[in-house]
Image 1 (cartoon, rainbow, N blue to C red):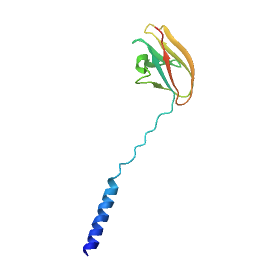
Image 2: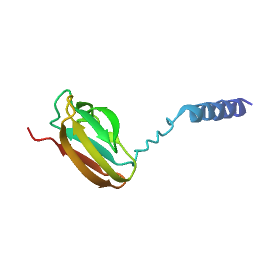
Image 3: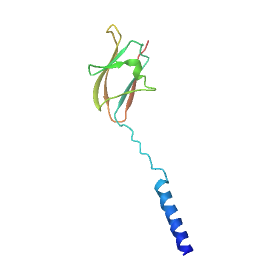
Image 4: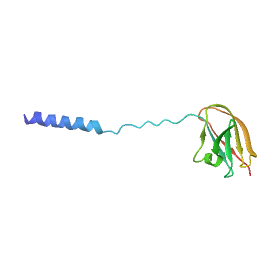
Length: 105
């Protein structure tokens, strides 16, 4: 009888431990959309993609943050606060491509 109780106790301990060990695996999925970054933009410069204002160009510096876009052809422009075009480039981007555009001083 003692052997049966000991076996049940060990079986119960194994089952309880099996519920908590090992930790569940974490699955991380990388976004496969293409991305655009802008290097060397003045603080007041604004980023436009296909004529739509995306925000301040320095926000998408290509180091810490990029702008995710859909695959395909895009007109990318960076304009100063006064509306002067600092950079204008037509790009064709495919999945998982990151294009960093540099504004020359």
